[in-house]
Amino acid sequence: MPGESGSELDRLLPEWHFREVHRITVPGTTDQVMRAVRATTWSEAPLARALVALTRADVSAERRIVSDYLSGMGEVIPAGDDEFLFAGVQSPHDVPRPPGTISEIVTGCHEPGILKVGMNVRFAGGTLSTETRVLATDARTRRSFAPYWWLVRFGSGLTRASMLRAIRRRLVREVGAA
Image 1 (cartoon, rainbow, N blue to C red):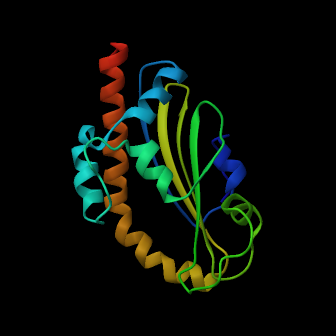
Image 2 (cartoon, rainbow, N blue to C red):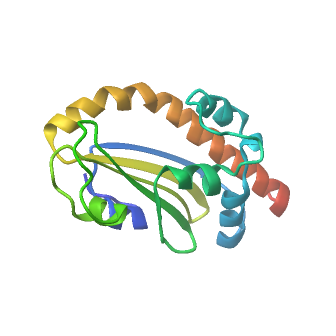
């Protein structure tokens, strides 16, 4: 499926097998919104914090969700002033990681046994969104990943929605709009 958002995620991973998108309308300029995205901590998103804590990740109250936690999940890809973009590569079948940066592997690797992952947090037209895309390089890898995706998707969705609401609450406090 081709991407439609015009984001850097479209450039990095224009097609996918698995996708999840969450959006919320927020007040503020691009600079204000992205500053809030970088600054929002786990203490501001208690539902997200509780869910992610189940994975035994470090969700200390003062840790910033996007800047500290999400950026530790993969390579941060330069994406302009309105988007944070992360990429990762996994191999559920213990296929050796191909050579190159994660960005190079995601955009150019077609070897079987690889999962390419892209995730962003983006502000455009008054809407803050987060999108995750996963592309398997072969049918076997896609089939083996599908049960995991369906298992974690609900909790991941709750986590993302909680994170977006926390960022919006911070913006409402800082910008003063409802």
